[in-house]
Structures are given as C-alpha cells and as structure tokens.
Amino acid sequence: NRNFTVTPLSGDHQQLQQACRTFAEKELMPIAAKIDREMRFPQELIEKLGSQGMLYMSVDRQYGGAGLDILALSLAVEEISRGCSSTGAVVSIHNCLYAHLMDRRGTEEQKKLFLAPLVQDYSLGAFALSEFNAGSDVAALSTTARQEGSKWILKGSKAWVTSAREAKVAIVFASVDRSLKHAGIAAFIVPLNTQGVLVGKSEDKMGIRGTSTCTLTLDNVEVPEVNVIGEIGEGFKIAMDQLNLARIGIASQALGIARASLDLAISYATSRIAFGQSIITMPMVKARIAEMGLRLEAAQLLTRRAAIAYSQPALSTKTSSMAKLAASECAVFNSHNCVQILGGMGYVVDLPAERLYRDARITEIYGGVSDIQRQIVADQVIKECNFE
Image (cartoon, rainbow, N blue to C red):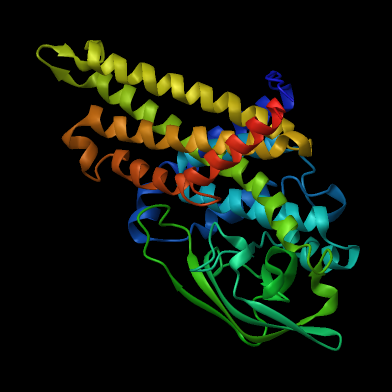
C-alpha cells in the first residue's frame, strides 16, 4: 500500500484546469467579496457552472453527467475555490455528497427520478447526516425512521445542511433502531417539498458566507420504501464511503484558498515598499513565502494522490484523510501568513486576505475535524505496518 506515485496531468485534465481557472478569474474573483459581504448564494454562477457540466462531473453520461474522474473533480474544485470559496464549497459538496452518491448507489428508478431531472435543470441536492449532538459520532444519530407498510416515517432534525435552501432533494440518514447504533442507520431520498419537511434559517457563519447552511426538521415525513438507498442498516457504510470523497473535495477547496493566499502575499510583498526596498526581498518575508509554497505543493501532491487512489478502497480512507488534513492546515497556515505579510491591509476588507482566513477555517472542521483525521491516519498507518 505504500505507493507514492503521482502521474502527470493528462491533456484533458490540463484543459479542464485551465478552463476552471479562467472562469474563476473572470467570473468569480470580481464578485467574491460581494458574495461574502451580502451572504448571497451565487445562484447565477452555479447555473453557469451547471451549463458547463460542473455540477454532475462524475455522473455517468447516460444520465446527463460529464462522466469525468475524481481527479478532474478535484482540479475543478481547487480552481473554483481559488476564485470564490463559497462557490467552491457548493460545487464540492453537491458533487461529492449528492451527485456521486446517487450515481454510485441509486437504483435505476431512483436515478431517473432524483438524478437525471436535476442534471437537466442544474439543480442541487443536499446531504443530511450531521446533527447537533451527532457530528463526528455518527452512530449517535437521534433522527428516527419507523416503517409503516410500504413507507417509512422520518422524525428528527439535521444540522449544518449545505445548500438546504436551494436544493430540491436531500439524502437523509436516520436510525431504524437506535440500540443497533451504526448498524441501524439507513439512507433515504427525501424531496424537500415533502409535507413535514421544514428548512430553517441560514446560519450566520464566520466564512463561506455565500453558502446556505441550515437546520432540516423532519416532522413525521413519509418516504416511500423505494426511496431507500442500499439496504436498511447500510447507511453508516454509505455515509463513510462518501465522506472519503468529500474529504478530497474539501482538500481541493483548501488548496484553492491556500493558493489564493500565496498569490496575494507575493503580489502585495512585491509592490509594498518599506525601508527603501520591496518587502519581498526581506529574509523573514521570504521565509514565510518559502514555508507557504512548501506546504502548498506537499498538500497538492497528497490531494492528487488521494483523487487517483479513490477507486481503490484499500487506499482511499488513508489517502483522503491525509489529503484533507494536510490541505486544510495548509489553507489556515497560508491565509494566516498572508494576513501577517499584508499587516494592517490584511486585517481590513479592502483586500481578500481576511476573507481567505475566515474561509480557510471551515476546511479543518467539516468532513471530520483535524483531530479525527489524525486518528484515521494513525489507525491506517499502524495497520499497514502489521506488527503483532
């Protein structure tokens, strides 16, 4: 399992990367500050990205998707996030936690009802797993599902549901028997216009303020049996498998933030004059930039490797957690040092440094906090050593 090879980007991957970079520079960067300031969901931008195939990147072409691999998805999220972290978060979470899951585990009927129509009109889906008292500890879910004939009745509340206000459908995880803990969890497809579904207000967040993050309340919501994804009791495994991909998406988002921070720091330090010289020539500024560049490229290599290894279950748990851990901590480190290099200008909203710092913090939290990623990585590394 100790294979560290990362293949060069293909021509197609390079072309996609450049297309997303151009979109970010022309469409996202000019309005990213306004999106953040107004807490405005970037609907027009999401629709434009949808028209270019960026909302269903890994979905099979027969359902209208782009049929691309996970490396392509990672590259796109990184470039989009470099332009606007909020837009990058929406694209990442939707692709990784809804579109890919429906394509991978949905039945033919489910795909026809809840995947293909959404692809056609560039609509979003949501992923409702976390609860206020069940974040990292998924087995502690309190949302319940009880069967009545050919339908299931869902009751409970979900927290931190990204794009809940804009999404048409959510994949909701609930327990059919709480005494079974993780073995009693199932995944349900729930149209958000179903009677009994209440979408709460958007949270007023520190960063990625252009995304809607809401509580989802389910008050005896009826879900037909055909809307169950996989088998009853398989929900925990479905969620964990999908979170491996989500961590690659978060790592890619973090890379975009880290790159934007480094670019801004170098640009500002080159033009800022102090003591009769550009501060880019000062040893301590160079030391910061060296460390920022080092961490960024190391995190990029881990993320590329994780994207390539995703199709190999024996590797994906470790590689995705390594990528998320390294990239998220790089984003926070780079954005912090960007603020330091800019000094007072890094602390005001005139330049994007303070926004990048606020946006970076979430990458160490959602998809599993850094402490959990370290635990996962340690377990996998110890297992590989195979000491008795």
